[in-house]
Image (cartoon, rainbow, N blue to C red; front, top):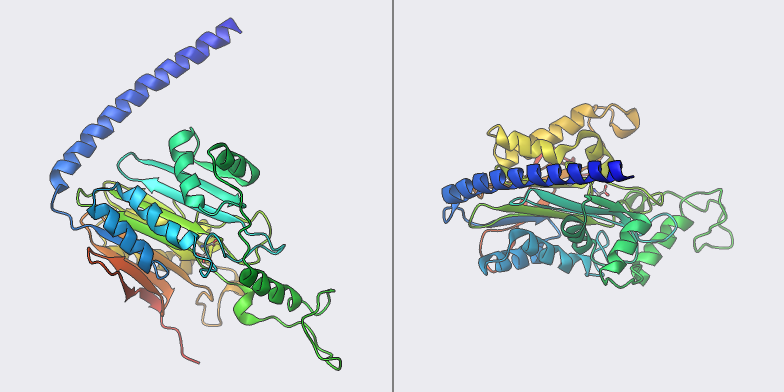
Length: 359
Ligand code: ASP
C-alpha cells in the first residue's frame, strides 16, 4: 500500500510537472498566435440552418467580449429550449420507446479541451452539461445515467422533455410501423391494410452545430441534438463524439456536422474537415472533401441508390482561423446560418456533391 501510494504520488507529481510544461508551451504558442491574429480577424459564427437565432446570439456575445465557447453555447441553448425544434433538446423527437435521449459535445480552442454527454435523459440543456464535463471532470465523455447523475450533482433539474406534439408524431410512427404488430393507427372499420411506412417519419434527422471564431482568432464549437428520431434506446450518434460531430483546433479552424450520424461515425469527418483546412483548403472545399470521403466509404447496398450514390444526407459546417466560413452537403438543398457581425443572421446555400432531382 505504502509503495503503491508513493508510486501514485510520483506519477501524479510527474503528470503535474509534464502538464505544467505542456500548459506553458501551449500558452506561449497561443500567445504567439494571438499576437499574429489579434484585431485582424472579423468574428464569424456559422451553424446548421436551424441556427438563425443561435448565431445572432453568439455574435452579440462575442462582440461584447465573451469567450467564443460561452457564446455558441448560449446560442444553441435557444434551440435546445425551443419546443418547436423537433431535433434538439426540449421538444426533440424521442427514441423508439417514446423517451427523449440527448447527445452533445463542446470544444474550446484556446485551451484545447472538450467535453461531451451522450444518451442523457430529462436535461434540457445537454450542451451546458457537456461544458461542465470539460471543466469539472478529468473525463471527456459521460453517458446515460452517469451523465444524468453528474448533471444533477451540478444542480440541473430533471424535466420531461417530451412535448405533446413530439409524442403524437412518435405515436403515429409507432402505429404505422408494421402491419404485424398490435399497435393500430386510427382506421375505418372496413380497412384491411393497416400500418404502412410513413416515409417522412421513417428516419428524421436534425441537430444544431454552431462554430465561431472571435476577433482574436480563437475558435470554439458545440453540437447538440436529440439524435435520430425513434432510435433504439442507447443509440449514440456522431454529435457527442469529438472528431465526428465536432472538432476544433485553435491553430486551424472548427467544424461540425448534422445528418446521418452513423456515416459520420465511420469516417470521423469533422476532424478531417479541420485537417483539410490545415492542408490549405477553404472551409467549403474542406466540407465538400469530407462529403466525398463519406460517399466513397459507403459500401452497403442498402444505403446506395442504383447509381451508387448515398441515399442519405450529411452536412458539414466550418470556419477557419482567418474568419472564412463554409458548408457542404452530400445532397443539394441544404442551407446554413451565418452571422458576420450584423444584428440579423442569414441563411446561405451549402455547396453539394449531388443535385437532388425534383420529383
Ligand atoms: N447527426 C445526428 C445524429 O446522427 C442527427 C442529425 O444531425 O440529424 O444523431
